[in-house]
Image (cartoon, rainbow, N blue to C red; front, top):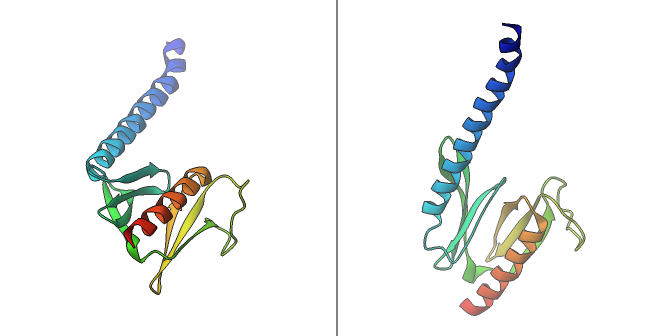
Length: 136
């Protein structure tokens, strides 16, 4: 009987991991549906983003669905800055890694798009600026 009780915590951990895996699979499935037809899309720990017909929109995964957080029209984009996610207005250097945000500036509008990875944010920054120049 004591051996059975020793395995009980392992069973609880297994059930917890299976439930977390199911939630992540559902999140990825919902993201694939949400981002279908997008020219550019991302899903990470900070949320999801997609570029469809020159309109960049981003959302957070909350309670089994994506809740919109913001949008920005790419043809109005004038500048993109890579900033730290948590430390105010400090720009990131080329060597910086980790969580960050892209500040999108254009036509008097300013929005922040969060990223979990600075390397991926740099790729998006280049891609958005290239698309902005193509839209002009």
